[in-house]
View 1 (cartoon, rainbow, N blue to C red):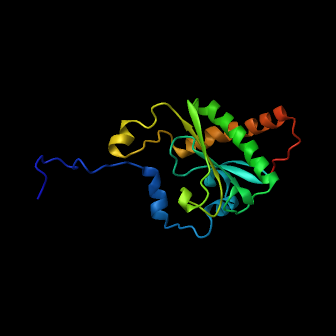
View 2: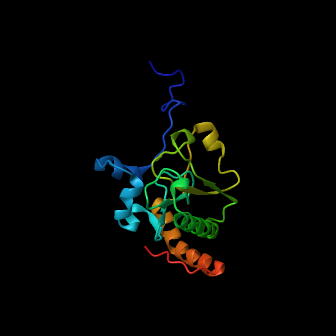
Length: 188
């Protein structure tokens, strides 16, 4: 009945400790509607919103690929970038530029991935509400742990990432506005 080595856990059995998930599991909380629309009524820290603009906001990904994985989301619920107006697109690009600067300062990444998945076939997890993923990357961040165990290690707690980026991003937004000579109202 047991394996021949007498080892437990068996070699195919992987354990990834994620004690912060117990709060969600035991809460019984389930979302109806769009998560990106619903979070805007929550407090920033609870929702992990690191910056609120007039037309869009920056939020941490609750299931990050790496520490510092953020998303830029328009307030308006549309499935594709081509359905946004120019003001929404412009603010999202301003927030993208500021977010890249904030991530560079906070994490010193070797590179940054930027992605938009439009439609389920393209990999959109929330296909009805377009958003831009911004991920800091480091040489070797897809290492043996991922390759051999199928487990990704995210070394920083979301609360720490939140505090770090919340303290940097507003200044980076203002920096971009000043540098570009814009008269821009990003207040929500």
